[in-house]
Length: 356
Image (tube, rainbow, N blue to C red; front, side, top):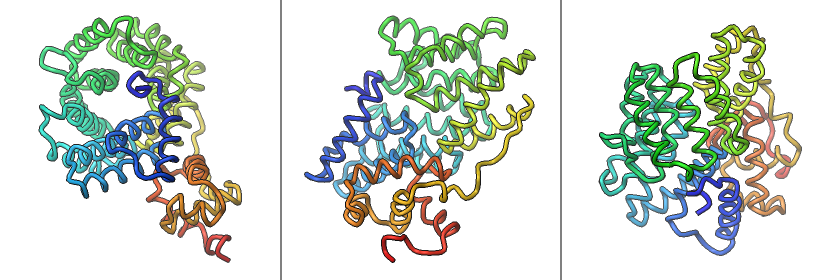
């Protein structure tokens, strides 16, 4: 319920506790997986989201639960698209769409189209991106799904501006604003403001950008906040307000780097250089910056051990292990557990200290 109400921090705490309890008392109900994965995506915990998707897909495939498998594939596709792996994102989105009847599983349809739109936008194919994101709404502009369609609005507006579909997108955004009215969550208010800023005439855009970033709650959705920062910084730079744009660009770039959102980091880096900022790549030997315990955990995870197995070796709870991994990923410049093996092989010459 917290996730549905855009109370994402509370949802994350509940899911963290539920998964810890599940480790000790058996698996959680299958229906929780999709909501948990989306909660972690929205919080910027993309590696953890993909782990939940993998678990959900495995259980769903074994039990013949096509909807669960499709949901996992759709969420996974969105993360892959945000990371810049467009081919993999398209494959996962197509997998999701092939498993369900789109009229019966509208949330899966919207999430898959969102992934396909993000993949196209990452490649600069904005007409395609708009067509995919437009599928989150009916022909007359109503949301196709009561919950999944709303978060698409700002990305729809961004694709519309770059693809020459401003008028149609404006009608959808304003209809959505009227429908949501005073019931819009702070997050949705911020997304609506960002969409309006993008679609407005240049001289009218700034108040909408400021309104989007004035929502303190947007900090709980780091990717969405970084997108709004980058959009406003671009607007400021084009109006020769370089000094105002620079801190926004620096914050946006740091967030995109931490999340592993490569296409958006590249765009922020290009914009930063245009604003006269000296942009350098992250330090290559980030593994040395981890604490000794974090290094042990990372090395064991790279060998394929689960959080429970690592915890047993190091006398830690699975939740503590997961927390250390979550904090380590941004420092290592990765977003998924699957990337650990190659990273450790490149940077380490010896085995984990715990096994010596």
